[in-house]
Image (cartoon, rainbow, N blue to C red; front, top):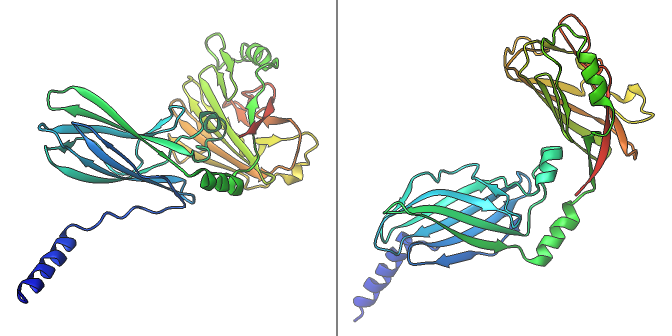
Length: 328
């Protein structure tokens, strides 16, 4: 009997080493574990948020309790409002689960939490207190199926997160009710580079001028303005950028507050040797960061002298009025 006990202990130690206990991931925000079981698929779901990287890390355990193989085609994180996000890292393509097989995945997401904030600022918004994990899969006979699990953050923990990190933010949209469109269209009709009848369209965040499209994203926090202007040229003419004339200003602002290095230009596509010329097919991202201490509900997007045709004729007749949008 004395010889049997050490042998049993050795067997238990060996079993523990080969079947380690699954450790729950930890982050700045830790959501409740979620589990689901069905005849076809079983899953465990652990979710944690990293505030520095604005990422969600999901550890997922999948198992197939059925008698036929399954193929996981897609795994998504979704908000209660239905905004879905695919993983930033980690592959979920063509994951086959044979009958009785178990698999573990570790995925990272940068979830789209607030669509309006993303459209206005380019930021995804604050983490939500609830997320759904959506698993899309196919059965062996090619039938599509979807299953989901819900995880939540403790109300007290979520409230503490918002109290600490949620800040009053303002953004800016284009004033679509001004006479800019009418005046700009009349102006372009007299420009020789515009071969066809001019087209001018303005929405809350975008301007389209006869094939040259501009999209504005911006936000102001702690008296600092951050803005991005994304430009795509589909027209038949080139556009020159006058970096020093591009600005966003508020009523009564002194020009001295505009720092020389406030504007940076990045060519997304096109010749990198000439950053200041936007040829047909080119994509350009202009970033603006500057002090912006104002409580005014309006501002001005200074485009009049910032963009020109190649013979130094301005692309814009006038500057464009901006309207403040308060977030969240």
